[in-house]
Image (cartoon, rainbow, N blue to C red; front, side, top):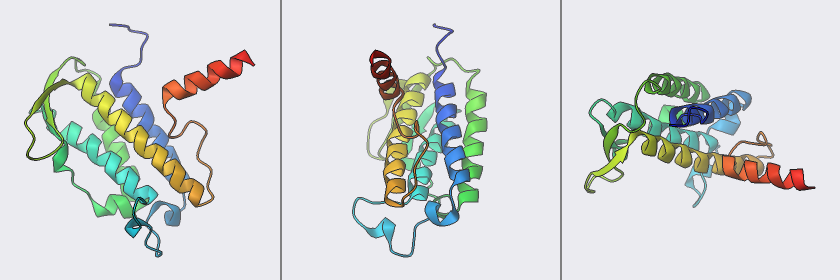
Length: 176
């Protein structure tokens, strides 16, 4: 194992900290759905809806660990997390605490997972599921970034951008 590489749980924690920083910097009206029905338009969702969805996946992962069965179809879909910044920040902090406890586990820990109720259980590992949840979260952060652009708000430069893209950009800038 490469001890210089960040752990998968550490990478997830960094993503959650980025989200927490962003949520804390937003006004309530930029987090929650607006009166114009943003969440009702096809292909659109509020910042809060994207955060709630990402947090749901962390919750499923953390909740299923004791049984070593992660069922992503059992998401809570909590409206309070979607509509209220304080609920969103509380749940991100709770997920961060859960991830801290994961650092003591072996990333090769075998798990069974499914994403839909009727699917068969698939074999996986803790590291694989942490990477999955991180990638899923990053995808939703990119959508948050686009939503913020539509609101006239600029996200931090790294927010919603894959680490490989940031490394590529840094390499390209070094060539100039």
